[in-house]
Structures are given as structure tokens and as C-alpha cells.
Image (cartoon, rainbow, N blue to C red; front, side):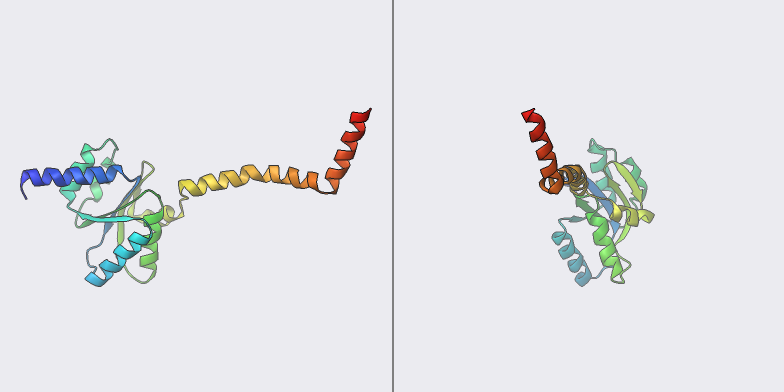
Length: 172
């Protein structure tokens, strides 16, 4: 490959990396064409981008980025595929789903989620992470709970008593 072509590819990889907040390095060597197609379909359904890249080109693209990817450099050995997503736990859930069907591949090499580096042995922890939207929903539900209790109390029999007491006090 010519130097100009490599620079174009590095630029495209760097642009792609900027678009996603979660990056998973995965080994997919050993998948036949049928299983690879099935994995790509699952990735598409889960809004995960799957790319096969050369390690040297990926490392150069990572070095050009503003994000610190240095924790992932040790995992850039052998065949590497990228799983990119804006939902931090989506690729991990996808890998667990495929591996749960009795497959050994894809295998997690390393991941960078929310500026934290995870190793190959932390797939369960990654799958258990809550996404940003899930955390926001939990917080909103917690904040709404006390308000709902007060409103339901005021609408019930106790609410009528409180209303009566307030009305009596206002007349005095």
C-alpha cells in the first residue's frame, strides 16, 4: 500500500474513532463467512459498528486523536476488529450474546469506555455497566418518587383532612 493510501486510511479510522464514545478491540479470527455475516447483522441491529483494521494503522490513528488510547496499545497484537458504539455496554452485551450460544469468538481483547480501559477478563463488568440514558432514567425515577407520594397523599382521604384544616385556619 502506498504512503498516500495509508494516510487516507489512517484519517478515515481517526474520523470514525471520533464519532463513538466506546471502543472495543475484539478478536474475530476463526469465524467463517456465515458466522461473520451473522455477527455483522447482530452488530447492525445493536447499533454497533464493526470494522476490521490493521494494528499499525489503528495505532497511528489512535496517536492522532485527542483521546488517550495508550492503555489499548498492548492489545494490538494479532488480528484485530473494532466494535464501536455510543452506548458503552452494547458491544459487551453483543459479545456475551454470541459467546452464550456456544461460540468462543468474538473474544474481547480490551475496551475503552468512558475514558476507562478494561481488559479481556472484564467482559461481565462491561456488560453490567449502565448506559448514560439508563442512569438518567434511574435518577429521574428516584426524583419523581417523593413528589408522587405527596400528590397521592393529598388526593386521598388525608388530603381532604389537610384541606379542611387549611381552610379552617384561613377563615380564622
